[in-house]
Image (tube, rainbow, N blue to C red):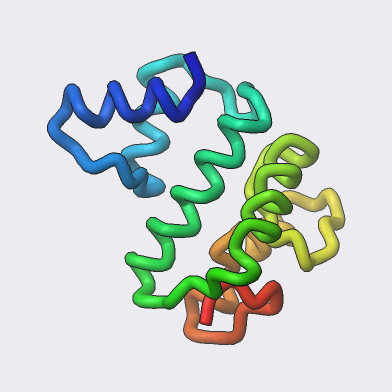
Length: 121
């Protein structure tokens, strides 16, 4: 069973939405003993897409649909390679503290700035 299937079952059992938030996603991963970088590429794509939707809703930002698929793929690849959903248009230094500002939705966008990837309008 993929994360996507597990998530839908988990959320349905709790009467929740199929749209993960950072808080309930962390709870889901903890309850199901899922490590940060464990899963298939499909799992990471599913999670990345839902993170994009959740942050878009939370911060009131529109998603730029024409570039969405490419950016979501970049986010999933970043999760596989580095263990977090780093912005695919930023350079990852390996310093987790410095790089934390570049986890999508990056600090600049959360504070009302421009999305350099073009994902959020």
